[in-house]
Amino acid sequence: MLASALSGRLGLPLLNFVLEKLVIGCAVAMAVALQSEFRRFLEQLGRGEFRQLFQPDRLAIPKSDSVIDEIVEAVKELSKNRIGALLIVETTGPIDERDFSVPGVKLNAEVSKELIQTIFQPKTLLHDGATLIRGSRIISSGIILPLSGRTASRQLGTRHRAAMGITERIENCICVVVSEETGSISLAERGTLNRPLTIRKLKESLEALLSPIVDREAVAPGLLSFVRQIGSKTRTLVSRLLRLPSTASRDKK
Image 1 (cartoon, rainbow, N blue to C red):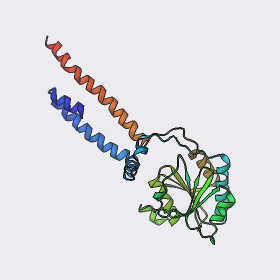
Image 2: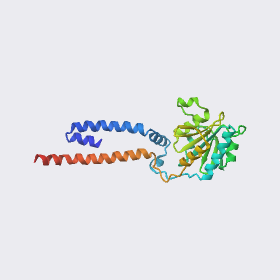
Image 3: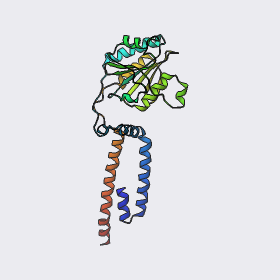
Image 4: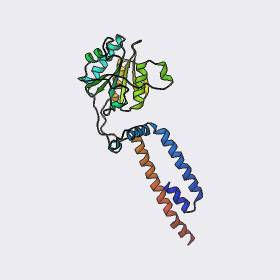
């Protein structure tokens, strides 16, 4: 915008026209390419979480091999016996439980394959909801999640739609789903459902997705990086425009 104003002042109408269209194009491109970052920004702004908007989140939740093994072994048995299950696993930091439709029952227990299998037994009171895993702890169970509104997801079961729905809203979590009807295993990430998975593929995916992240940007790393690039290019363009009058005056002489 500043470069556009300067080009107008310097009597460069063609450059001014190109810059104005470029600004509009960049705005549209940012809205499309960074829609998830904008959504997260607006959600945190609406909750009044102003400090989190500008402070980098350096918190990572490493998952040891033993925790992943416990999850995989539990899912293996649940799949084998065709017992439905839905696990929410945090990746790079605690998620906001206000995004849940119903927060569930607090457990704060150590992750174990036996406990996970027990929770999802059909006769238990908590088996219908999701279970939240944070680090090496099972935080809560019986969680009711918002369902995905996508047309394609309506052909899926409730657990699969819930897994897609929560990962659409929250980026720092993944969901593991076991189908009650077929025993097939699915993994939801950022609203996308990968299925069916073998036990080996599930373990490989968990190891890849749950590796610790040392540092993250405050709200939207892609957005901040994009803004920095635009700012750098704008400063370069402005400096070139400012040199134009002196160059023109030398040519006249």
